Image (spheres, rainbow, N blue to C red):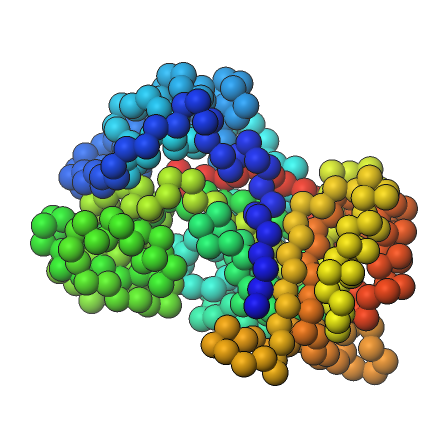
Length: 421
């Protein structure tokens, strides 16, 4: 079975202020299409927005400081209140503790890179959340849609793309082990990370009213994330390959009794009406993406840079002892861990929960890289660059007792949470 640790995001970004949090019954607010266009994607008044910035969208006002578009922790901003006070357009799904996300006119985050001339492969159709994450992480990049995540990685390996982007963790689902498994089976390196706030909307053909919707289509995870709202609507649910693909299907077939769950930008891209905003069951819904490239890493970091190093540690037995030794290797050098996940897979174990061993590509094997099977694996993200002497010494110590260690990448740490709106 798999034991999953908490998401790597800082605690103050994940948890609402306990003094301000109020629990209320959830309710989905439907808005007419005309009102949605007049008030902007999230229902806020766009007339007061500054010109489109060159930077990225991010949280403003974290830790009680005033942001570009208002305050947090119960203080009023341009678009209303957060953390217990009602905003101009009400709550999203009735959650009083939602943190307002807005557009900053400042520069990009710590991991910002110029994407001009780069091709980024993503899973899904144009308008998918992965595509928006890629364009936010690498402004100016060209995106390459792929049918599957494996196709996106293969596109980088054969030179059809320069980067591939994979969603690997979310605050609602935890770690996406399937995508980590894909990462381990390939020889690509992690070059960048980005955290994206996922805002789900209910989209329909122009002129269709909410009362006319009988079916909702979207990616299975999106349907699961919006389960309570869909139950209240009393509609049938039909899973498709991705959110943007659902919108594309809706538009191309002119389905008048069907709606799709997707992003507000997908509505603009395909010319659809937004029937409901903030459809997700949990107001704080953040997904972490990794951008991968062919080795060597295209990112050059100073030894003192605010960086992360990701690695996988594999062993064949004595899980607790190995775990304690890994922790000791980092703690003795005052190195913080931002992610630690223990995977114990016994392929011979009986029961429905048994999973096969983890397959890891050994890129250091003599001759051609070789896939190796391991029943016990630790995913580790630590603070610091891989060439930092302390980090390098910790890795060398782990290599003495672990069966196999592979550094997956070293990249700039970027804890900013970006918003589509």
